[in-house]
Length: 611
Image (tube, rainbow, N blue to C red; front, side, top):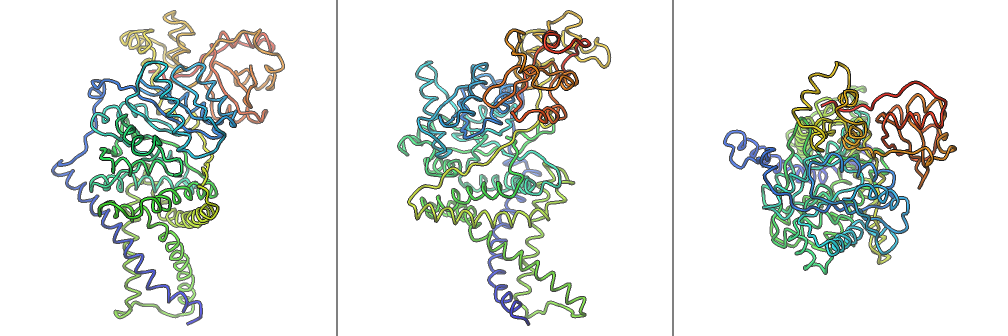
């Protein structure tokens, strides 16, 4: 046996013991989950029921404030607000968006939306940033209180979201429905699907699918506290006022990097009721907050380091192992990664070494076997069996949400995730110790965000006919009649305008709400000719868009057709500015085209989801 083999052999027994203990812990959660699912299937006892559309409609709409903390999110926040304002099937709500005075691009981006959407309010912190996400949320809460005082209103529920979130159209209605009985309602959070080759993002898909499908429901079933996910979380006013009274008016702990996790614990200890809404599908789409997570290793390590610092280290320092045995058990579950991720990394390295040496020994004609007295080998075989079982369970959870093709990559992504988590833990320990030595709190570890493109939002669009009926432009019967009588291949909006049933402006106002794009009318005298020619004439003709304003690092373009991925890709070749698209009617575009570009053929009509 070589010196390396001897060194590795010395690690095998402690490694096997740790993996068996951790694996048995995971197996316990798996068995509780499976037993509960079997009980639900055969007896319906304890089965979670979701509200039907009629039940949702019967519950009076409580006034909801949606708090969104920001730091350097000018590239995504406009699209986030536009989309969620357009798609949300709820009326009694407002967005309060927290910004910092030294982040002018983000303040301007939010202000632009607020200027045309009365339910969006800019909340500028009284000091420069970044501080912490919790600190930004606390000042945004104060801005909401000032709004209440000035307007003589009161918000009953507070929902937290992030700049990259794709809210489900029914999310506020579901939170409103359950808030009659619970002080904290947590909707599922699921990464949006990406390609099979996006290994880093795929790790998030796997982990969230398993955690939201199995771990959190078991936590709820056994009476543990429910950690907030930070997004898709609804708080009752009563619960937040309890937090304010107990923690010197700091609803969100400004020293914590995971104030969401901490609030779940604090609310539970204040006697507040909590609910995690299990993953349920509506029209083939899970009712959940969706978003993109980091796709590169560096940002993923950075984000996970923040999670380790906040969930494991800061909460450990603040709360220790206090509470009943259930609290201690879930503390163990939440913190064991501090030791478990490095151990798993070492186990993976030993496994890789063992595979290489095994192949070498087989080629050399040496045979391997497991003796009955070789307890370490049998222990390692037991840990392997547990890992195979857990891999199968995770793949099953992933299949339910992302399909079996994506789930086929789960075993490989487990190894990739182990490496990411190891480096994240090492980074977290380094940052935490450095902050302690400097006697300073860890700073906001910012993650760069992206927002879904149009293709990812299509499933969320409301039908054009539904929006026209909601606006009182036509009755549902008139919509049905138009759908049945319009020529094949002609879009509904185009038919309604050509038949004289509606004006272009009425249709485009509905299209604006449907496709999450601002709509306006542009006058030729308000556009400077150099700006209008910021794009080549051939590109303007091809894509039917016209530049009309440059502001805050954005090039604003307008046209009668919704932007496609191909259009945006080509436009980005001609400008370093961030492109913001606005709808205008075909006749408005034709007027501008003739004023700034040589005359061409007549215009077309915007695409729309025909129903």
